[in-house]
Image 1 (cartoon, rainbow, N blue to C red):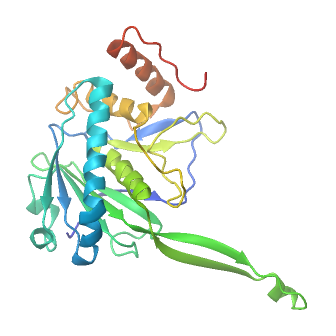
Image 2: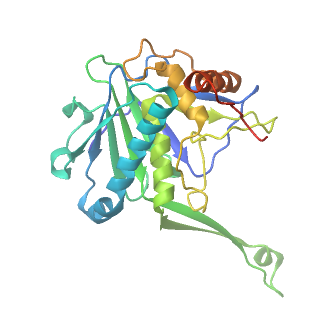
Image 3: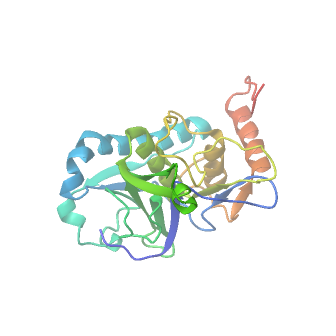
Length: 284
């Protein structure tokens, strides 16, 4: 599918982010929220990726959408239903998002990021959003299935010149990401498509809260499995849409939500959902 550039948010394998005050989670901005239950259109990839798509990626996509839907439903009790539809490659490969006015969230896969879509070749995926038109508001998610694993090798050479002895070689390998890494990228980008921005860290403190919206992660780590979504991310969406979910009264106009407000919202919501429960955040 061909795209026009609007608003793009990247997830990269390495990044530096900072803020003057306490941690917060950004929103995608005022007015960027779905006014009704979104239709998620899953775009069949080009033929070279279709075998993995039907063996693995399609299931990962379904599971990721359902994870957001079910966790939000359990968290706030609202209407978070998202329909899904598969669009064949032949029907979309030479089309624009505007040719699919029924679709509100587009999900597509590509093997590698070599700059064909965006300038940042370190991006593991990106979300492109256009909510400027009342008739068709959409978010487009691209997920790459391969990533660059960078290695640094230092060669020690006895008897060589200082220049040769201190020579450092940087090698980069393009490797397939496993299911857990791809699902993590997909869940992150879906968060953007629903209205959440990035987690912004206060580098002067060490009070980070669990979130899927950090702007970087290691795709080759063995700690990428996600079974449940963090409360902080669910609370941001509850504050954007209110507890009733899609089609709520209003969208949040704040550009970011302070972590203090997020944690207070979690306690308030959990107390309402379960009056007999004790809510504990952080280590006991």
